[in-house]
Length: 452
Image (tube, rainbow, N blue to C red):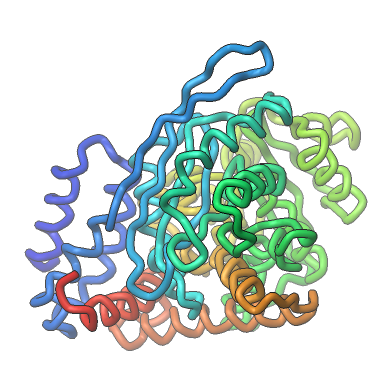
């Protein structure tokens, strides 16, 4: 590896102590950008590599709010505006107790390349809070969202920074956030995406990440003359991404046998069909219950405290296709090894960086089809971009129109990854292809602006 890349990885670790997820993301991206160093000496001269790992700005703020007992609660809010070279900052808000600066920086850094791949003009950002919406009343969630927006509103805008949802931030939270933003600034503008249809949302937006990762998996499988028909599929998580992955896999003729949440995993060997999925959607989106209720209702196996990947390894379950759709680093080396041993030939990431470096190495060594998150799950932010377009035009596209655009975008991301991997000497490597294709576009834009 070149001295430039090595030194920059070490320097980034030293400058950002304790931010392990950020270190991991930077290392993974920079190592695959190695071939660009010789091919683009102009990037080296302009210090693009050094500039791209440094966020434009990091905003951290206090979020005090009142719970239902009248007690004062204090959380921490974040917004990391990483890079706006190709468009306004764009990236989700995550509400989860694990949220810290390192996680938000890793997500924002990944978002730069993901957004670049979508072909839409969007920069990279991410935000959120260590607030946990789980177990909170609607009133408490509303009070928190309003307190959070009281500070965040200063830094966002339709042509500046457009946040969206992520873990813990769904339709309910986006409604509360947008309602308060509109009240403060006295404007009805496309400043948040993932909005409900009644006030500026886009059709297909809730489905987009899950649909998109399935479309991407289908594109990868087509390169080996394979399809989803009759395949045994495992999905982790049970939120928005997982739900719509199940829906789309069913439409393509696959059979999904797993879902999970932070408490445990269900395995339904007969497959999670449309009727069972409707139960999951009500359970998770309306009643906000735990996945164990599915096991109780449909009399299937429930594994308490276990991840989908632990269960597959321990139970030796046969798998063809995997969609990790829960959270970062959910698959480690030993689980990846078991996955491949049990027959898995395709992994498409619905979550951000759900496979750790050991797992990724196993996928690549075993030559399985592997779509990294920044490519495979880019359908969500792509459709957020389409929502921004509709807001700007004061116009709504039909469901078919948005879905067609989403399919076209996922196909074009797949093509970009393959073309870049071939052009830079590692044909078929989707990780390198995604990183280089995303990076080169941003790097050229940064270079055009001079030193800013």
